[in-house]
Length: 454
Ligand SMILES: [Zn+2]
Image (cartoon, rainbow, N blue to C red; front, side, top):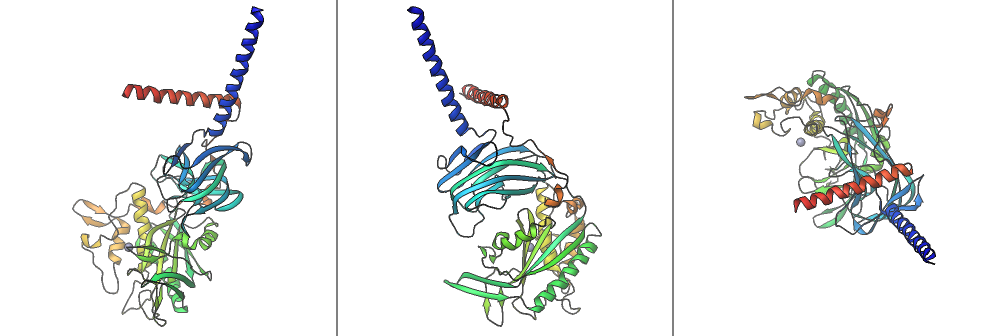
């Protein structure tokens, strides 16, 4: 009798043990994000779960649910080699993902946490979609790759599932040849706030505009090559699109301008070719004959912007066809490509800083005694800026020559790519157990630290 009671007791405790293990394993499977760290704007709003009902291939997908407008992600810290192109891909599925404001660069996407670098977004309700994110490590040795629902521009609500993560490193293209695209937007058709009312403004490029830009691009190529004394080579395409610009961005400093996201459909179709290193977009913001103008704060070009990691500049055509800013004339302007050079130099100025190099500000010409001259504008300043021959009592300054070989990551860098060991799922029970053990060890270490600190 005694023995029987013992056996029953043993069986019950065994069943209990098994039940506890099953429950723990179920909870673990549901909430285990492997090496990923969960992060959200306000703690406790988003739901992070593993979902076995929504699988893309093998493993349970990673789900973020935002019940209200919010920004949330899970990220992994990945070591990178400086000056190397990287490509991260994953599959994303969404249910009713929408952003708080209209026309913002947000949704379910891949990004580098604490930076503006990001992929395209998945929004609305979609089946599994492949999303690709390119970036250059520049001078970084590690980055936090995030899978995000929301964005730096806006918050989103809805549900997103992420799966099939993959990261590859490519070969940097160290040639000094830059491929430019100059995109002519024939039409602008936008609704903007002007003098307290909402107005629709329609504008179009004239044939004179197109001819001027075409000559300026040719001159831009020759000038960049000559002024840099061969340190860089320029190849370019000019493309014209009849797809109108229908949305604009706005900030206090510049007034209205065009961000890459404002013209994303057209930009994406060209970026898909995977060959461009810099994009100029040319358009009008006014027309003197129609007395129609979009308010801009006195800029003719805008630079230092990026779209999906590619340098991006605005080139604004004047409101009047007889303006000489983009026209070559021996009596008025013999440097009409100046705006293009200036805006591209903003990208090099930005790159130099992001590669950890010293360089003066592009707008600091007066500080070093360079002035805007008739006919030539600031050509001498740019020439010395490009060649690092601006004289100071601490030696010559300007752009470092290595900057002409530092170009953005693009598909062409991945012809011979190498897959990295990032975002790996445990493939068998041993790896899974090892993962669990590592987690317990980490928890234990954290607990120990807290005790020591106290
Ligand atoms: Zn500028």
